[in-house]
Length: 465
Image 1 (tube, rainbow, N blue to C red):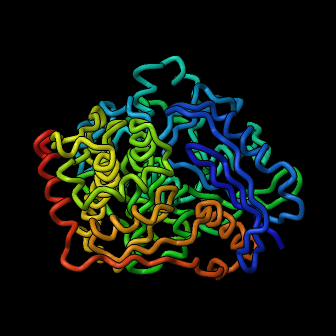
Image 2 (tube, rainbow, N blue to C red):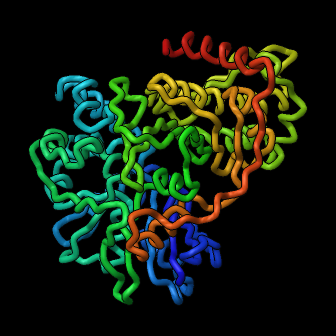
Image 3 (cartoon, helix red, strand yellow):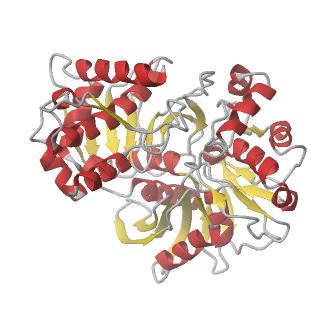
């Protein structure tokens, strides 16, 4: 039998069709999404329809994975009240800070929902909407996430069909507790100034959401990070570092997390376990921006950076080009520090961009380590992981073996694996082949320490963090 998996990311919609027993990808298609931090949800539906056109012949089940933490507000008829606010929209930063204070502080939030609100969390976006667009807020009857919206659309998308979500994506909202497995409607009311919109029903890992009008089984679906973990077959000791538009660092855990610093999101995964995760706003976009600034293609940046040396001849890039989430600096800008007549050269700037991106993610990895996570290796995924030099510098800066899985649509593959699991009705997901890996060992002598120390010094000098 055939199953399909969807990855509706910030930049595009990707669909894979796989054999349900082996996971072999038989078909693949990609459609673009509009750019921006607020997007009409209908654009995602159109991209999904175009990506699925002619692809679903013989498919028995489908699951949607999507970017997490986008707020989709619907009226009583199921129409979007306004454009969706995405995870990377920082206008709700002050609303998040207000909510932390109003509910008794960071520890109270961590205990309640496993995460402390930041601009990215939908709970903060609800407060922003209530305060800045009260007329729109008054029209809101339901609040869903991007994956919830698309799964609902696949099932017909009418007002009489109840939207659903899963625990992996619900845990990203700031108003669903992974530890307790329930919504905190008191936090919704607090955030939305007393309004109480309906929330999607939370499905179990292998529970079906329903069927398409054509009879295809629609699985629960999930967020992009839980789906990638499922697609990779994450094992104990593995930490994933994803270099996509954003950067994420996460691992699979058997226990829920509750970090009062707010750096670690206490997410759930797509299997019934947990997925403590640290997210940055800036990752692969740093390399794209640097390449554009240097007047070269992104593909040429690696060749340019190879002409530099470890430490970029004294240059340090703080990669906060679109503000930053971790550390919590939503209004920050990027900084290139340490310029001299000797190092103000394209090759050193190119390498500084890679080192800065990875130092920021190494700080995120340290936050997981501080909770007792003991990584044995890093799985490096995402668009920027295709660069051999990025993997080599990552091994140096993380001081760990870096394993780069063969390039694949792991989010869509994880969604397809979930669809196969739901179709089979088994207790555990199907066993699919482990992806082939290229391993890059950490160099002897801890040579990345000096780079990280200089990065930390510059960060503290400019941002006191």
